[in-house]
Length: 216
Ligand code: DX5
Ligand code: ZN
Image (cartoon, rainbow, N blue to C red; front, side):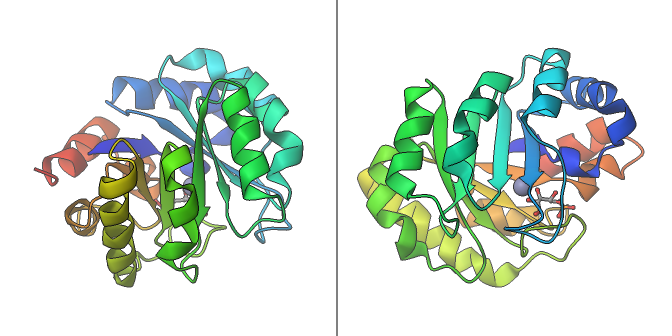
């Protein structure tokens, strides 16, 4: 299992250092949660911040857009140094146009589904995308409880991807910790986002290796 610490739980006044700590602690990706206060009831940061912190690691930047009009901002996030951009299928932008725009920037494209959105909504796109992110909390805030009832959805997407696009990365986001990660792994996740579990731990390196150790 790859681990993507969510910077949403970091100390934003020293975001660069927090990224360096995660890099040294064995993080595989840096997960960056972009919220616009419209698609979700919270506001975080945008492309200028991502651009500034890009230099603190060589690890891939996994940018999760929780914004109403992702298509408008793909250039900005790609130019800021995103390696993967995921956006919500429930957003107002056309999925195909947005996927093609992301791919035209030479980076990986992914779709995100909120808890109430069924697996089949992403099926038409599986062949043409690199990642599906399944939310296991309602997007907007860190520190919420893992929704175990999303596991059949993960498994359903994994199964369809095996048929259509075996290289597809399946990511899970929300409430991941030592008590929940194994379920996500068994349901077919390859990448687990972890905010609270990693940042609120005194020893992030230990926290990340524990999470990985539970997925064997
Ligand atoms: C929620 C974000 C998550 C969040 C996860 O909208 O997409 O990435 O930071 O935080 P934890 O791991 O604390 O649930
Ligand atoms: Zn996220």
